[in-house]
Length: 137
Image (cartoon, rainbow, N blue to C red; front, side, top):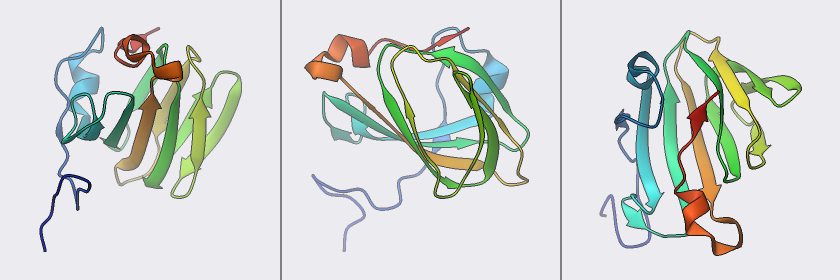
């Protein structure tokens, strides 16, 4: 069986996060991603972005926001999170919704990397919104 086809990816490999927006290099070096589906994904789709995301133990991902909505599906590790005025612990099985422009931040508290899938989409099909970068606040 193949590891990849037109409609599936099996075990995508994460790699270093490239330079991005106003994110500091120290933060980017603590992140690893695999762009699985989306405008820059292994499988192209213009209206949705699904990214496998890893964040190193002890990393603080400061408050940031973006104009597109996101869902995080946490797969492993643990982090203290702040989405707007809500604080919570994210661990395997936690699912979050982040509305457009909501400040959100996290700090990895586990000894293992935080692992999640992040799903962002183009509300109303507006791909310009999906492709607008996040900004550190």
